[in-house]
Image: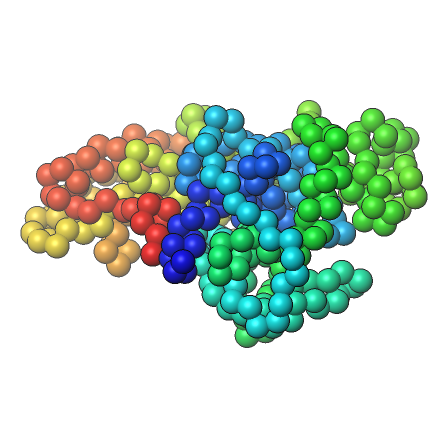
Length: 370
């Protein structure tokens, strides 16, 4: 199989995971009906947002956390016909060709090829697979595969400025956790990082919930099911406005200060840029056509004179409808007024630009992978 064929084979099982703190990657195992990822991707959350090639953004429960081996399991969506993949159980060898698949920096289904630099690299009494395939933020939790498409590890870390020096968790640890969790399937289980006993909510001492009931080690229990992640400051004010505009902020949230609203054919991005103190809403509508650019420019300029709180701009070839608010000027009333204009008019503008001016739709990353 070529690299492209291998990646296309794995694409349907690779998912993107979003939490209030950022994004990561996971992959589905049909035999166990679980999505596998890293503990540090899900840490502190009992629920995450997942999306993939076969389904849209959906909330999903975190079912298992293992802080020691940096593994976690997530409940998959129902009624999705995921393909099956094989886990290779024999040991990886030095020099083998490998491919890491994930969503680094939000770039969906990115694949990087490399070799196994060292099959068993011991760090803090845990063996890792050391690879030279590029691992970047957002790759965490994705599958590491061999040249036959077998899963041989879970990508977990990279050394900054380490010239593509990455690490993956061997499947031996994964298989042990999968086996240990099976009797508890459907319930949340935390594996103690010290004694490695499995802890259920019933076993937690209500008077001392921060300590393992077996060995007394301090543990980090995630939010309870009736609790939710609490945003604060400007982010909280932004989410209140979005909720009043009928946006599901839990699904839209892509990080502490980032939100993504999916529309029919395009996306709207809301970002609080703390370095410049600006809150932006950008509807990235489409790309410029190859011909009759003058007509498009004329239309955009005329509309800019008509719009009250938004304006058109070009980002390379992309046509963007935007608004910007300085954080010290931000009020809920101001944001409601300005963002409502973008949310209400962006659909109409999208249809006009595509149908009347033959502008080019912006493809989703997972539609045409190469």
